[in-house]
Length: 274
Image (cartoon, rainbow, N blue to C red; front, side, top):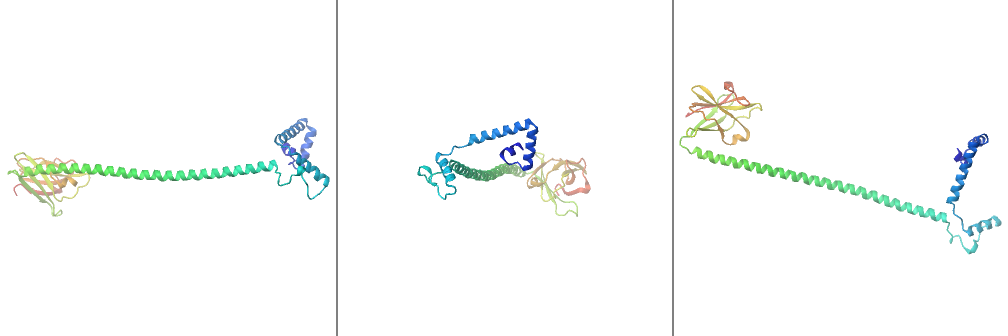
C-alpha cells in the first residue's frame, strides 16, 4: 500500500487509510518518507538531462501559449533532433528482435540436429542388425558344412564296410495293420561286430518318448539302444551289435529306453536272413 501511495496508484480509500495511519504512527510516516526518498533516488539515478534546446523550446511554448509552430533554439528542426529516450527504446527493440531471430534459428537448428541424429541412429541400428544376421547365417552355413562333411565321411566309411562279404541286411516292416507302410533296416557286420540302422518312414515320436531297437535271441529281447529321428534319419545310425540275433524289432518307449519292450507299441520287425 505504501508503494502504491508513493507512485500514485493507491485508491482514495487506501490513501485515506494510509494518511490516517501516518497521523497515528510515526513508524508508518517514517516508512512512507523512506519510500518517497527511494523513489526520488531512483528517478534521479535513471534520469537523463535534456539538452538546452529542449529547455528553451518549453519556455517558448509557455510564453507563446498555444503557438502552432515553435522554432528550436539554434535553428534546429524537429527532424534534426532525436530524443535520447527514443533512441534507447529503438535500440533495445532492435536488439530484442535480433536475439529473437537468433533464438528461433537456434531452436530450428536443434530440432533439425535431433531429427538427423535420430534418423542416423536408426540407420546405424538397421545396418548393424543386418550385419549380425549375415554373421549368424555365415556361422550357420559353416556349421552345416561341417555336419555335411562329417556325414560324407561316415557314408564313405559305411560304404566301405558294406562292401565286406559277411554283411547281413535285415529289413523290418510294419508290425501292425494300424500303422501301415513303415520301414527300417539293420546292417550287421559280424566280422567287426558292428551294426547300423537306417530309418525310412517312422513317424516322429512325442517329446517324452523314443524309439528303441531290440535284437531277439532265442525269443529273448536284447536291448540294441535307442535312436533319434529328425535329421538323424537321413543317414546311418550306429546301434549295438547283438550276437546271434534271429530277429530285430523297434518299439516306442519312454525317453531314454526301457529294460523290456512294450509289445503293444511295436512298430516294425524283421527276421535275420528272411
